[in-house]
Length: 98
Image (cartoon, rainbow, N blue to C red):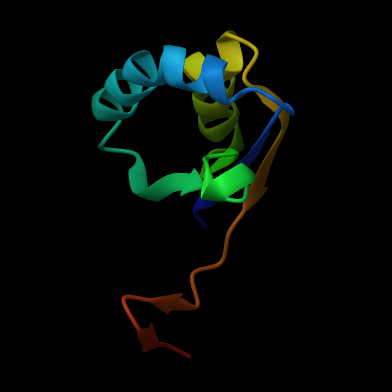
């Protein structure tokens, strides 16, 4: 079962997020073999980025937790909270599968 990583930024962390975004993107590029989907959440002021959601293709919680822990956003204090949880794929690419 894949894992979801759901991260919420600390209040007011947009500048810090933007500062560390190049390193975050490079980190994601180095882990493309694990990433099924991902992107920023945009619930901040004026629809600015305020968190992240990633779906990882791994059956191993430790791999997902390591991925989340070593994200440059996590290492540099962007995130207020991070949830790593198993994720059951039900709808994917607009197809509902039983």
